[in-house]
Image (cartoon, rainbow, N blue to C red; front, side, top):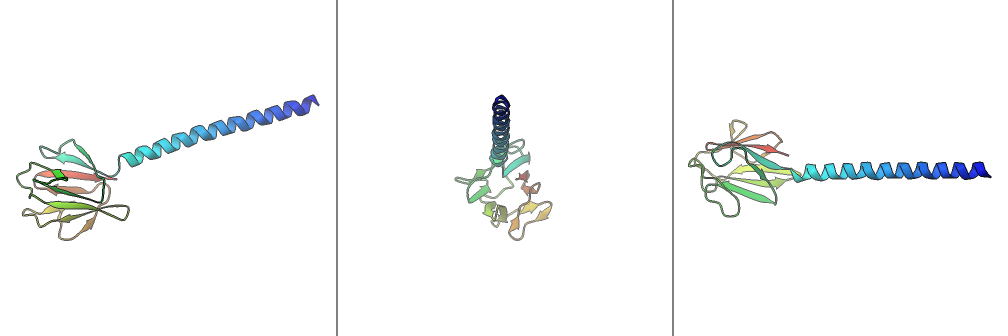
Length: 135
């Protein structure tokens, strides 16, 4: 009778230990998933007086970048048009389109002529300002 009680106690402690480990590992995993979503997607400023070293999180359906933008990303670069480009959600990421800017917009060194889907690591040049898109 004593052996059955000891075996039951060992089994109960083992189940409790595995349950505790499961809860701890699940909490760590969920916290890491929240951190990944908190930083994605975003524009990182690589060059330009107002943008260098900055981190601009992207949220919402659409954002307009230009020199004089209400509710968008306004940059004091003299080579950027008032409404230069628009970034908007497409699928599970963002796409970019030139809004008829005077000096053009460049994606990875190529001038934008049509809507382009952004990939993590893409470089966007607007006037003298350069951003890197990160997901």
